[in-house]
Image 1 (cartoon, rainbow, N blue to C red):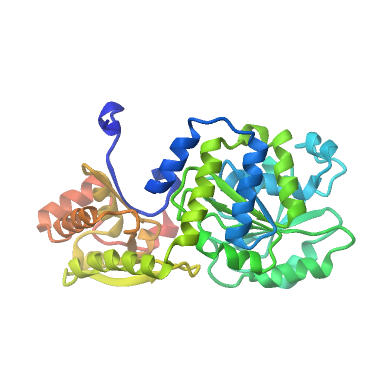
Image 2: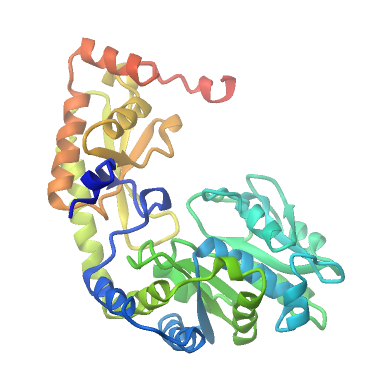
Length: 399
């Protein structure tokens, strides 16, 4: 069955990465097999979640784990857990936080928008986000000063969206939380949505709860993974009898997480990385020698085992801006979605992880076609896609 044709959907080649807006990842065959079998079955969901927790603990080194609807839901429920613990009365009270410690401290450079503001996830639980520092940095003094009698948790984000320097690292945040905590625990919650390769490191750094996605680099069905200290994981799961009810995850999400983690534990990550790098270098090799185009390798900023091809465009020489190129690529059939986060800085990335060799070749063919087009063709592209041939960076702040 051709779902694109049946539902009149746009065919997409994903050169952007594991993006929610592109429906996550292509689910791996062995995961599809187990999820398909699960769809034919009934389960005691509490028992299924217990078994999933055992797999999560084994894969991450954490004390315990549970499955949520997604990372965003995991953040909401982790914040809720920090406020209520396992007290069913407090669980049922939310989102009314009267009488509860209800402030969550995070560095301003970590207050990202991942499709929605992370601060909104905090507010969904009924808590109040307390941002410290500035967008380009925070100090330990900022964090310590913000912690008070109403502080329920500290939130730390590991993402390509966060400030790349100037922020207090996770291990120090954990040490600060331990140092200033009174008789009540002051948990550190980590949003590590796309960090499944690093989840063991995040747990071993001392974080109390770590959340990541089951449908990004784990290549499973849509779900979130929460792992960490058992009492807090239990409190996260307890929210399913409260505000977590409309965020519940189904059997397909739970079984998908179990299958994905089991697959990851068997994966030769070094061999996987070599294969991703092979495809990435095809892009770099094909675009060499084009006027106004320079190429380099962008290693994952968080230290994950993959890299992306960086394509830097000098509009005066190339006759096109990176923004125009990305827009033109997306407007074709099939639509080719490139990682255009940084076009205002003069470059874009091609992420080949979700691409087949045929898709890499088609992407390169189309890029070469645009970048070597005639002057008149490039002018027409610039006019159509709203970009100027000169990428004047002053426009970023002048408007």
